[in-house]
Length: 281
Ligand code: NDP
Image 1 (tube, rainbow, N blue to C red):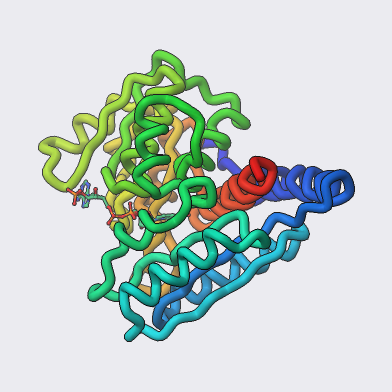
Image 2: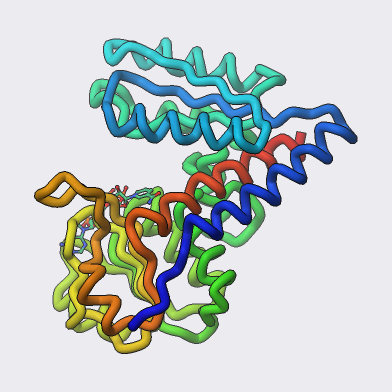
């Protein structure tokens, strides 16, 4: 039976540390880290994510500002808002809650964010820094996964890490970070042939697809560490990942649950990036 990696407890530990660092910084330098979250439209899931981010900021003593825009808002309006926030001294981190309505160019909006305030790490400048291995903001979800693997003492150097999913926000940066940890990395996607054959060779398997039950026990090497990034709703409307938890936990050495795995770590890393942005001034 696999060890269940408690992302919630790890995230709490990270948040406690951030709270202390924040108190010290406020006392010594009088700086309160500020996070601005732009929410366009009224997607119910996005509203929940934004509320969770606001709650997390409050808990560690950060200033947070939620800016709600109508779904009909224009590209120019959004870019103007981002530029205002770029020049707002109370704001150290800016993020645009995804997804935004399809008439808007998300990439262009993110590119308008000052890379020094891009706490999601989605700006091409930060993506490029990650690619070449120089310090910059790293996307929160893959950053949280690496932190979990480290905290759990799961060796990455020399191991075969398989990442299923190649999005700019999870799969690709995940692969880069594992490579930086000296893992041998394979990235799979919807066009990959013989997915199961590849995943069965993984010492570390990261599923970031968005398909409930995609990873089954027969696709997992005995003893592997299985990290489930997926967030889906099953037929009963319950939150679940990409991994068949019941089956895979019989085979894997370690596994993250959904909920309570990667999700809480993502928010903790967002706080960490915001603190870093404030420290950088
Ligand atoms: P995307 O939809 O952007 O990317 C999904 C990836 O999965 C794509 O690269 C796609 O391949 C690949 N894929 C689709 N079907 C298959 C398949 N049958 N076999 C192999 N690969 C496949 O999603 P995101 O990266 O944004 O998110 C992935 C999941 O992670 C979602 O469930 C999302 O909700 C969750 N998530 C969770 C977070 C957390 O904090 N826990 C944070 C962010 C995301 P292709 O490129 O060929 O289309």
